[in-house]
Length: 239
Ligand SMILES: N[C@@H](CCC(=O)N[C@@H](CS)C(=O)NCC(=O)O)C(=O)O
Image 1 (tube, helix red, strand yellow):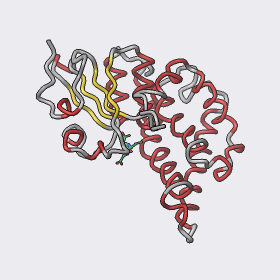
Image 2 (cartoon, rainbow, N blue to C red; image 1 turned 180 degrees about the horizontal axis):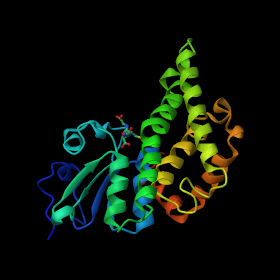
Image 3 (cartoon, rainbow, N blue to C red; image 1 turned 135 degrees about the horizontal axis):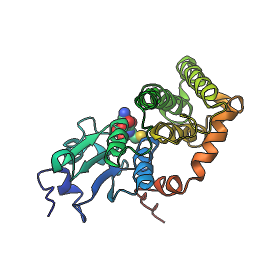
Image 4 (cartoon, rainbow, N blue to C red; image 1 turned 90 degrees about the vertical axis):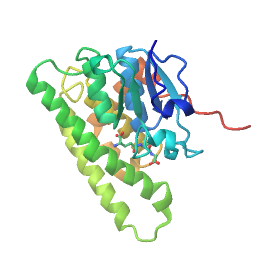
């Protein structure tokens, strides 16, 4: 019997299936990276919704798992040495789940593996943070700032990242070529968010990046992506 009671987060989000990977998340671009990977691999897991509208990510129970108070986070009851493994940071979780599934969605050769990690880091350090700032300055709190220089700075950086990605994807099905990898799972939820939820398609000039648009379409058609983008289910708005 798996016992996760030593993890305070399980008091607020009790596991119904403590033998499965526990996912604490919300379907945001960082959240869906992990739900998509879990769906792609077929690893058994139990999703728990972390409600931002109730600021649950800042609760002491959630911060006992991730002191940064950000989703996604997981506990694998059957981690290394068959001991529970708590983990936060989506990139680290993708690497872990790839290893756990026997190296799926990661090239087998060492050079290909490091190259995939390189593109994963490009997403974690560049695409996510910069696109997120475009969202803030275009759609959320920063939208009403009279001074447009901060917005323009992040738009310029987003365009620079998109140019790198578009050039990389020319002549390739996915970031790593024929192989669909965790680098794609990390990157395309953010591209999608930029041009849909953040309403920044025209602002960044998405038409100038046709390879990015092509691969985004292929990504969104994958059954695991369709499913993973809706996990954990968001609460229904009160009617
Ligand atoms: N580097 C982290 C970033 C996670 C992150 O920014 N999560 C956002 C949702 S996409 C969040 O939890 N925001 C809530 C908050 O900041 O309070 C990762 O990749 O896991």
